[in-house]
Image 1 (cartoon, rainbow, N blue to C red):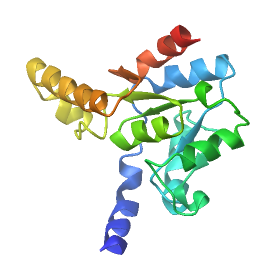
Image 2: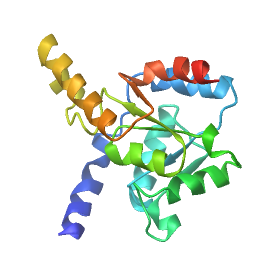
Image 3: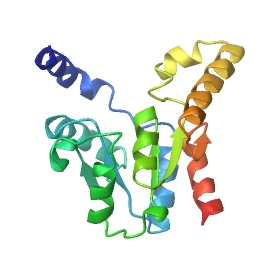
Image 4: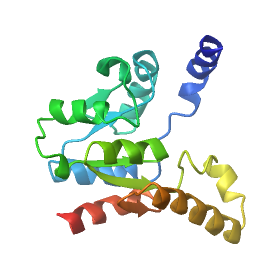
Length: 176
């Protein structure tokens, strides 16, 4: 079953490898402020090989990309991938690490690594809608869905919850 799933996923990954809205501003901010960043992912190296060149063309070029293959199969929500990313980025203070994600496991990974955990609502795994599907909802439906996602992040103890990636530079500034 997994083999079939992976084949379908590999065949469709390039169709959906679009950065979240606002990522161009976040990337510019990180680069301008010399803030190192990396990725921890549920993808394996074969999947990353397809996605990373597409992400790079959109400006996303993380210093490190960590998969569970690099942590002896230990993935989220365990802290192993985030800890390895921090080690490779030569970050020694876990409290200075920010784990930004769009799923419950992202938030838990951050917590388990003693990092600051930030949940992103729009375009999230929890929301489960494409941008077009979200845009087709009424304003009231969009607001209700955003509230539902925020509540899920609150339940698992996210340190911060942002509607979109556009808000991340301001959050970093306020924490710094």
